[in-house]
Image 1 (cartoon, rainbow, N blue to C red):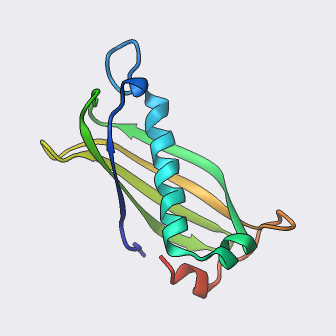
Image 2 (image 1 turned 60 degrees about the vertical axis):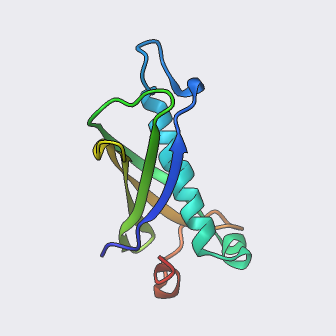
Length: 130
């Protein structure tokens, strides 16, 4: 299962650059998490967000090419699978100017009841939003 791809565009700020002159590795993961949150917010309403929250169980990231200050990048994210209380989300960051992939990543998420913070099964209704 691959859900609809959600995209978010960014312009690399000076604050993202490390001592080697390119985007710091941790910044990419932050951008992925921000894109995941934006995807969640765009697909759900306040009632759903009051009922459920997500926590990350695991991250994996592969660095393919560096990126630099002032570059325009596109973050793509989608849900790759749902099973029980877990969901695997994938990410890709691309530089449109040369179509190079900057990173590929994935995160394993767990759905929690927002009030009890206990894992809860991902329903078909919830999965269908993506």
